[in-house]
Length: 518
Image 1 (cartoon, rainbow, N blue to C red):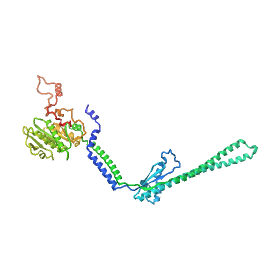
Image 2: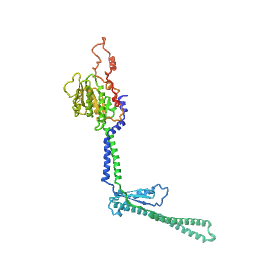
Image 3: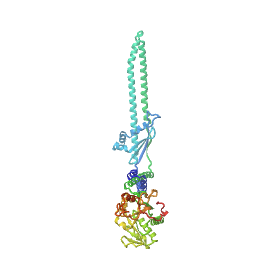
Image 4: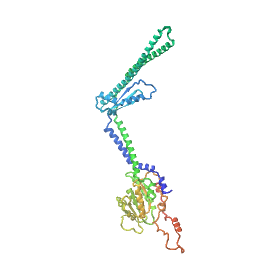
């Protein structure tokens, strides 16, 4: 697979890295959640909810039926929340508030098809009760007046139809009388038609009278039935319940805001946290990992684990002498303590010196008085059998030209999520320019659920299993000397170069003490 195809296959956002980054920023979103909790509690205490009155109104619908799905009640709620009703209530209260503003202080809710609940807020309890009573009266008056007007209109329409039928019946009666007065000369068919029409009109008149009476009777039922069944009363207010509710809402909002901020910052800052990302960007394998140093508890366990990692690193470095450096990137305390432990392991085999070039590390105090000698960079030259462990930093602002004086090869101590991808590339490029091989990477404070592989398999000269000596001199394509009297052909020289591999050396196998990192 080419590099372009590999770049296309990589996802835009690595969900595993995103989850790990958000989990590593748990202090931030836990802090925002706590701030939301505290803010919600302060709002409940400093800004208490205003007094609230509630009332229930029984509404009788003339066209009510058991199959109604609540349409009539929704209509009543909509009428209740109109400026007309609000304006009538304000007239009863002698208020100067605008009806549009007054609508924000109350709301209606249909409990059943015939029961309407009214909830009203006020500055005081008396004001809330007065508002609830005024709004209820205004709604009932408007509702009864609207039904009476509808009934009166219906009754008038029926009476008009009845009068029209009577007016039509009068000439028919006269025609019947005139036709009967003819005696034997009367037309039976004509009489039959007139009798039939008279009967039809008489029936309509009677029907219109009955329906008009029913329309007039329906209005008193609505007026008598529509009333306040539950007088306005103040809802009980529990400070503890309000405090718990507001605090819970603030906690949820703060948690969501913190998680969102952590996710956005993890994507924007682009700081690798997985072992596979760190090894990929630095071009070296992860050979060990150490947790974040504890402040109070489990210090002895952390020291034991660090000493085991130091023994592993000692076995990984060159055994015939020379110097090695530990370069820090975000874990100064761990780097200094690890260098002292490595020097202690090497001191059992011969003289060891520590070269202190790590700011604010105080290696002399950590090493104490013993076989380990702490030197500054540029002190006495190294003896023949002396081993030196240089300690430096690769933070931004590092003097790259001084790194080669700390050690011929190096071990990087990198804190997960400390540096961004661009800086890791810079570190790898600068060490390559200085011809300082990277033995491996020690990851500090890794994610405990990170199961990614931090081993490089596609570069023998960068992998721990094939650590190279200083690069050999380049082979000339066309050497001046002859071989068997002939110059080698370019094809043979290219074939020799292709078959050539980086030189490797054997070293002691890595102890299973570092099984967790591998």
